[in-house]
Image 1 (cartoon, helix red, strand yellow):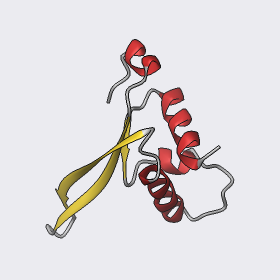
Image 2 (tube, rainbow, N blue to C red):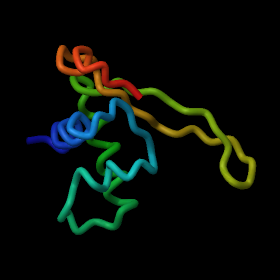
Image 3 (tube, rainbow, N blue to C red):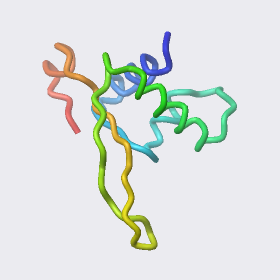
Image 4 (tube, one colour):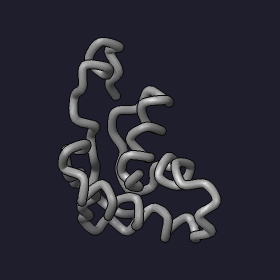
Length: 90
């Protein structure tokens, strides 16, 4: 099973349809990896980038604490009959 499949299954079990950098689900979906949480997030996001069959990429334009513009990667689960039937959206 790919990391992206595991994250998608975890998201569906929690009723979550989208995530972005900093979401704890990126760490929670990979327990026991032994990675630092920031490394786990990077690996999770990289895996989602490589899974266009499961996830739709989007960007969030925001500002960091110092006021500098920042772009954050985000991902949405692609609609499946399961998701649309349950009305899961975030």
